[in-house]
Length: 388
Image (cartoon, rainbow, N blue to C red):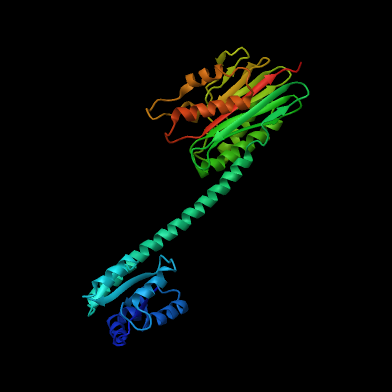
């Protein structure tokens, strides 16, 4: 693509001189020149040839001088239109005025053609840098738009309701996630399996960003689908593990999947490499939940997962979070840790899951303060209450 240059000067011999000087570049379509003899003609040329990127203009011309032309050029606010001023050496006041008002460079008369060539090359280099920046900015805007779309899609995977109810008992569920980037690899979900069982899951895909977000959506859908038909938590996780191992490489997800029987308060659960949960008892005591040391989902096909069970009593709350919370660091490089979680939970006895989750999320954010979040944070709470 040729660089298009407009020369504005009332000395008509300059047209011949320039065409002769740059004849090879004109022939090779590196440069294309247009000529005008005053500012008014220059504006007409700009209108007829919007591809013009460099204007080489004299200051002193009839009808419209170069400074007035420069003011018209500035009003276009076109970063890809650069002006070089030509004037007599003793006219430095006008040259300074022009430079202060947007001219990128200047030449003095009589024009040194070698200096003109260097000046044009330097100006073209600056233009190319600006063009690159504009392309990069457009690509960045496109990426941001794509991330926004991905964020909306990811949010659509999360539960729309924060609580569910049963005719047999009452339980409330609440979860939230805070990605480290625009989109993340953490997820949570809860759903009815039948009229008295609630399935709930929290997961942490290895990595962050678009790839993790896509895999998060796949994992969530697979677990929800398998959970509707599997007879137990371990059957569900084993099935999902084999599917992921067959279809994905070098991607894995830490998952905790539990099934709450709302008739008894018993939870059947399988922990596949996830952080351990807690139980907030109705008397304010916080208990750590022991789990089997299963591997994460997606690493080994036909892996023999082991399940466990626990008992919730009236008013007990089950709480679990991803390691983005337990491993959050503050400015002094101290980790948030499980002790903070236990301390905060012990103060929240009797609260509903939404209050518990929101309180703990705010507490960890207060702890890290302005430290950059490096991992996704997801929290999930399930409270069991028998109906009187």
